[in-house]
Image (tube, rainbow, N blue to C red; front, side):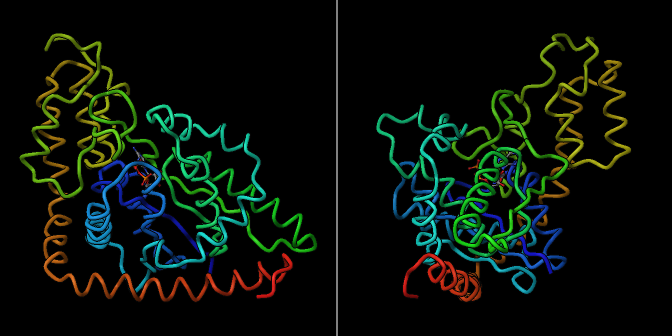
Length: 327
Ligand code: ADP
């Protein structure tokens, strides 16, 4: 069976961008593939953070993932820092990765421009990511579009390590990306992609009233100034969210109403709100039930880390052997 690895930072609440771009795919693929889903807490400390907040967010992320449908019977759910081999392999990959490659990464350029003093960890973030994936020899990595450049770097690291230490038969597979039909969900402010660090998100577990307050002022087709102006659905973020949350017949109806000015944007948003509520309410209710049982969440993460560590140790033993270390 092919193996999947994917990760998510506990740097804030799980939002609908994460859900539509990645998590929904993890849920769909678990069982069909051997799946490892990792809460990447070491990645989250590459920007300023508070220890207690990190602890809470790590637990909350586990709750949100379980509520979204990650099933511990069919997927290994664990926290990165519980498996020391991630950082061990990352160090090894650091010695193979050219500085220039890392400086070229869009996410590094973007995040470092927002910091006065740039930690080296922000630069080497994609190297740790390569270690996360290759440690499990994953074939497939279901991610959003923003991760494609990092994944290409993981493939290069695999190629480089294989060429140097396993030239006859590749030891590490070159992992392939798997994206959803919504690989890049935009923020409600109409600017950048939806991201935990940008505060332009709709949280997966937010109360309906809070979601509606965010939808009401959300940016739509900028050319639609008056209520009577016909809109262009394809340029409207709300329409794209309809495509993700509403049934196909509703999407068609929305497009027709928008392009003929039959509906104003607020009517269109009301229908989207109904579709979102329908999908998100059961997730929110499941999360409340899971939150009430913290011992089970801890046990799931501990069992997940044990399973992940068993795989990681086998990989590291062979990596060290081939590199001239006494395993
Ligand atoms: P964030 O950018 O919110 O901090 P992460 O870096 O933890 O999210 O990414 C977790 C997963 O969610 C990754 O696979 C990433 O590609 C995906 N993802 C994040 N934001 C979006 C988005 N706006 N649209 C689609 N996928 C996204």
